[in-house]
Length: 215
Image 1 (cartoon, helix red, strand yellow):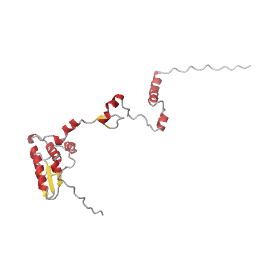
Image 2 (cartoon, one colour; image 1 turned 180 degrees about the vertical axis):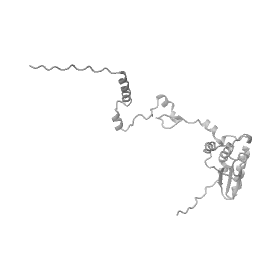
Image 3 (cartoon, one colour; image 1 turned 45 degrees about the vertical axis):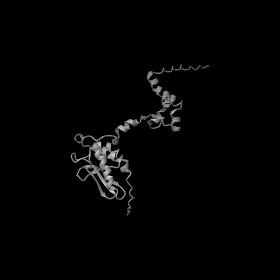
Image 4 (spheres, helix red, strand yellow; image 1 turned 90 degrees about the vertical axis):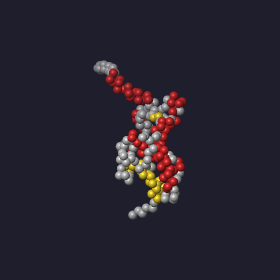
């Protein structure tokens, strides 16, 4: 009779701290995903954790979605309070005395130009950069519009480089400083205040689209 001897089973190695550390993130990931493995997650189109989160109970109770930008169920940033927005708007500022005016560089111009989109930075008649805008009015109303714009400039103590009726229905305004050979913050403030003059803006008319010949 032949007896078969089996080798004793090798004891299973005890888990090492390094191996446990490697498994911990996977276990935590499955727990966060509701015990859904990676393959199921990919097939379900979930795409993994992309940083969004659900709002907390406190956030929901505070109705934070009415004062934030973005979706209510993602990370959010606070809107600028209305009072602060009013403070930084050019139309609510005052022109500084001429001696304190400083010429703006390109970066400074671009920041302020966002509040006066209808004005363009162009070479003016005085051979320096100006804020330039042409206002179309009804026939015969250009002179009255010039008076309103000049009144706004006088109230601010800052004169435009050019403000004249180029025809019975068009007014050209250029804002810039001959002393600075360019534009300063005062010019942008004056432009914003002209745009905020309801009587003056109420005189503007839309020009008919120009016919174009395409070849």
